[in-house]
Image (spheres, rainbow, N blue to C red):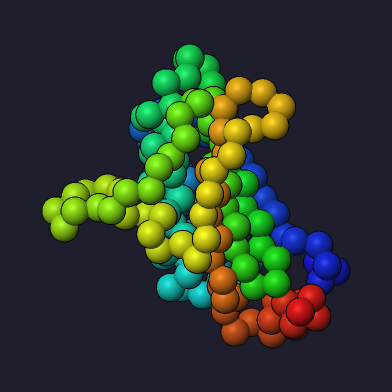
Length: 147
């Protein structure tokens, strides 16, 4: 299992297609169950991941055949999710209006940011949520050992 010093991590590659946001939500819910994340933290992470994945698929202006990479890390009770795509446009913070259907996701994060991918075209957009672990003793003990 986890030695307490190494983050748990998982990643997957999704086609740049509108259905990929739905797949990302499904994969994250399954992963959250395995990692025994709190329900509220899972719901928040799923919402933010869905928005980042949809943005990567719709707005990246990358050529056909490019994929979106999702990477999830859990360390010391803190969840970090990264979405990489081949687009070069960096996200900019904005306030969503009351009736807007999108643009709200990252406002829920404890921290978020973006940076150009170091080895190739594109960018990585990431967010973090703290205190994500449920009450499962094994994962709670692992998080406590790290702190």
